[in-house]
Image (cartoon, rainbow, N blue to C red; front, side, top):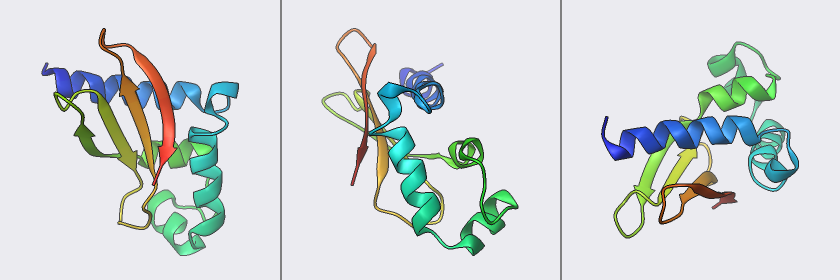
Length: 106
């Protein structure tokens, strides 16, 4: 498996694991709560089957947006489908390949 693909999977797993924890308050949790409040019910109904989905359903929608950094394997950005937001959940890997930061970016 290519390093980029491996890190995408690791990043998504870390995002899901961080949700609902103190580490996720200002990143993953904020991203989800913001979008549940701001996006119309029709968006959620179409993609999740519910006008007010559970946060785990929103997490399941996250799609890879881009990888960037010195070797294009340091930062991985994820967002919602449909070009409905400028916000991303960004996962950063340190020099040893360990995730050292998850943040919400715009």
